[in-house]
Image (cartoon, helix red, strand yellow):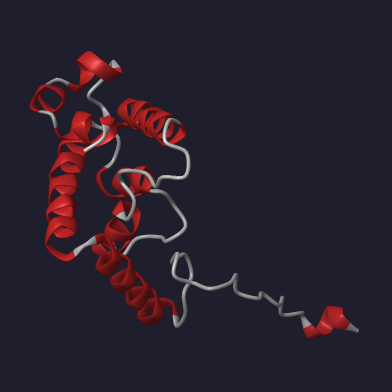
Length: 144
């Protein structure tokens, strides 16, 4: 594991996140986590985030919006308090177990299949080959 997952899975961090991030409330911790993730990604250019696939996994799990990041999915589902921080750790453990058992490629493929069922096409899936072409529907009264 790298620095990000080492931190997020460490007992000492999980027991006392406020000691590291200044608060156990998810509303403050989320920004610290995003900064840590950004720093780890910047220090390893060209490498995916250690949490690659977590957003897709959460999107399927909660049937939430597909246009937000993993931090926002946790926030939307569990709110801003310390309970959300505890849930993050539980969900991260489940995600890492799923990755170890099935692999990240399977999660991404399952997510693409989920989006095909839900949206009748790929909306936010990274397996989408190209951006969907969007054509605005004109109001017939204004078109003329």
